[in-house]
Image 1 (tube, rainbow, N blue to C red):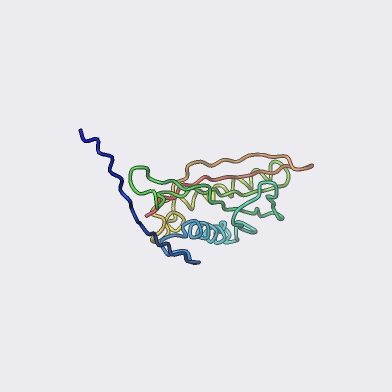
Image 2 (cartoon, helix red, strand yellow; image 1 turned 135 degrees about the vertical axis):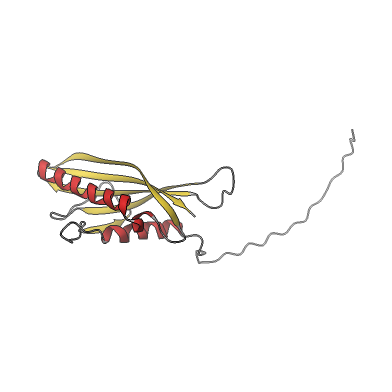
Amino acid sequence: MNNDNTIVDLDETWTIQLTGKTLPKYGIAYKVSNWLKNNLESLTDDDNNPVFNKVNLGFDENNLKSFGVKPVCDVHINDFTYDPNFDYSMPTTVNSIILFYSKGTSDKSYLNACRVHDYILQEFLTNDDFKTLESTVRDTHITNSRLMIQPIRKKWGVMGAFELSHLLF
């Protein structure tokens, strides 16, 4: 065993280049949220009418609104998952939430929310444009969905929620 107390001086220089631009391989949250927004804006019912009055990016749970008969939809990126065994620099999945809100009399708003839920579910099951995004999202899985009845002043509202997991390239 060598007990020699050798001191080593390291003289290292690090150069960091900062840019004001997001590199093309990054910006995943932006791409996924806009892709979901565009898909939901183009969603139509059986009579070819838009399902949503408006689709927003992000949401404020205190200000979810529904205008008229058609619900408003909010798209929110929830979190990213990284593979712990390989490279921490790129996410492997993006988890998102789609919320929509319908208000009115309890039975009418609930039936409307069920109808909207089924339209969204149908698109994720049958339409590849809702499941994949070229060079970004390889596949999308619905991890949870629910409808929740909520009182609003003298009326009732129904909030629908989809939790999605997007597998990345």
